[in-house]
Length: 605
Image (cartoon, rainbow, N blue to C red; front, side, top):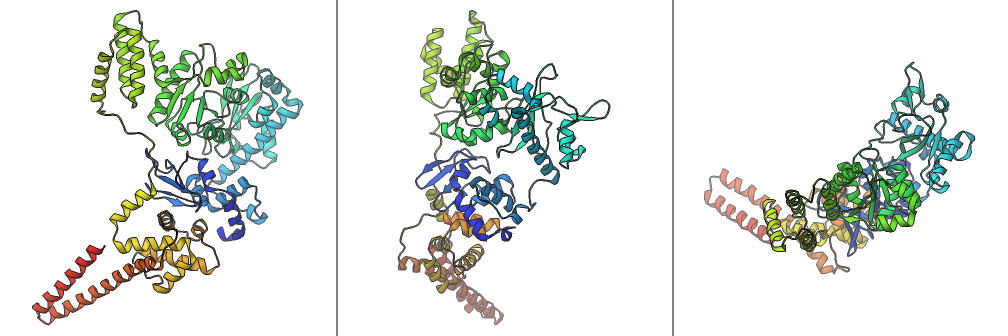
């Protein structure tokens, strides 16, 4: 597929999409020196070892070894084909692909899923048009207006309305060429008691549910009138797994990065109301409790999550479960407080958007404050036994808090509220910490793995000639003249097979007239293992100007190692000949020479 897209267009697209911006849409990146670091999205880790180099436009994980450029990242992350990755980047940067390329059908999705996706796109446009501009949508438009949703929000969320007509959607999609069986499987149509199909969402406000790429993969429907049930969602499919998606995540993720926190809500109307109130970093679950997948997704993007669920007992219980799961995934959690008869949408309609931001979101409690309040509902604190049980329960939770300052803060609260000495509370919590295997405070979190440190450690474990080859290739990647010198001196006579192949590719790359560009060079290499090797080598720390003497030293180590190996091979052949001639003294002398040469190699390597 790559050779069907002009190289010049691929290069234009790649350069128009900064790798830090693209990867920053998937994980939280923090700058350290020249590079950016974050938690690797390809394997579980607690200490960031995933590095992105902006000037070279490459990434590399020092934990799992994956690496490449912006195109290979998307192929790995989204399971895109090469064409899909290029198309995605082209659309993102406003670059048009040639018409013959755009018609290509290469995709990682099945044909059935492609058809489902396009059917959802058609219906999203149709339902939204009906809501905003036709008499059929007046009922739905009036309902949204009554709920305080303005046109800007309706457009941003592509809200729509499905008329109360059994065959409206079916007829529309059949005219577009879609089979009825597919539409039933996608949950866009349903089969009634008489065996006839009808619109699943008829007579409902439509909430398109989009994936993180902004593509509609399902719908939520809210009944207008007396239809039951009041809320329905599309059934799960290859495109739609409600435990893996968050409502509004496609729009919210850039605001999540900007604010450095996410606001987690329970419902679609809550998110839309928060959006209108200026809280643009809000997302919601899709009618289910928060899942581990969703919690880990949020953690990839941000450290702090503010939970703002309904103020009733069910909302408190759900908030506690979500908070515990987010904490388990490494997030710092805060929980907003609402009166028992309030949810975010009703609070905003009653008190206004500014009050929601100032009095609810900004005033949210720490997890421990929320937990202490949450726990009190289960105890009668006027009873002595319940007071003791409550304090013990709080201490057990507090024992898991890393920060000694935070622990002391809440211990003082308990001490003042229940008139217990700090010494007694400290002794109790120390006992709990010993029981769970915490003997001393954890080291500060978020230490970023330095590529320099990692490469230094690895270099000590490799033979000298191996390190020399890596260093040479690193210099060759950034300087064509060095590549020419190495080609003249040793050609592709590297000892490591991967290095031989990389050097051969690199010589050809420069012969084609290309300038030094690691990201572009990676496009020429199709083997994943070689791509990873190149990105790891490209991350090596280098001097700005390497002298001819230093360059020759690297070359000499490689040549010397090759010479010694040839010598050893020759001596081994002589040793065999001496043994065949029944000359044990000569054979022993040769064996001694081989041992001495091997020892010299070991000492220098």
